[in-house]
Image (cartoon, rainbow, N blue to C red; front, top):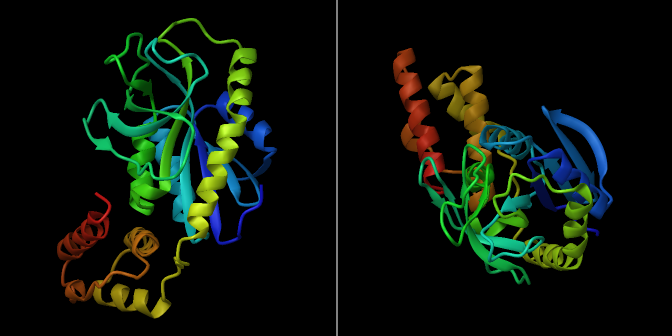
Length: 279
C-alpha cells in the first residue's frame, strides 16, 4: 500500500499481541525506537505499540506526534475489545462515541469516511471489566487517552477508533489462533477503509507544520521562557498550525516579564489558548 510522502496513517495498538498481528497483516518493518515503545513502518503506513492503559497510550502518541513531520495525518486506535453478547466474536466495530469512565468526558470522531464496519460506542476503563457497563457499549483500557491526545494535534475528522470483538467479558483467554482468524477476516474491509482514508487525506490542502524561527524568537525573547517552556510552547504552536493551517496570533501575550511568577502565568495562559480550539 503506497502513500504520498505528505500523508501519514498512524495505527496505534496497546498490546504486543495486537501489534504483531497487524504488523504481519500489512508486512510492516520494525524501525528504531523513538521512545519507550515499539514502532513499525512501511511507506507511509506506521504502527506504534504503546503498552496497556491510558498513561502508556498518551505518552507514546504524544511522543510520536510531537516529532511528526508529515503534513496530513490520520490516526487509528486499532485493537481488541470486550463487547456485549449482541456483538459476534471477531466483529469489527468503528466507534462513534468514546467515553472515559473516570472523567465522563466523551469524544466523537467524525464518521464521514466510507466504511463497512458496524458502529457503536465504547467506554474506556482503568481496570479490566468483568461485566459490561451497559448493554450496548464495547470496553477497552486506552481509547479515551488516544482521543485526548489525537484531538490536540488533528481535528475529529482525522482520527478513529476501530476494535475487533475479542470476548464477551469472559475471564477465558482467547487462543492466538482465534485472534489471528479475527484479524484475517477483517483484512479486506480494513484495507478498503485505509484506501478511503488515504483518498480523504490526499484531498486535504497541504499544511506545513514548520514554524518560522524568527516568529519563535520574537516570542522567546519577550517572555524569557525556560528551555522546558520553550519546548512545550513550540510543540503546541506546531500542533495548532497543523490543525488550522496558520500559526496563532500571540501578539497580546508579547509583554516583557519581570518575575518568574509572571512568566509562568503567561506561559500557562498561552498553552491554554493554543489548546482551546481542540477542546
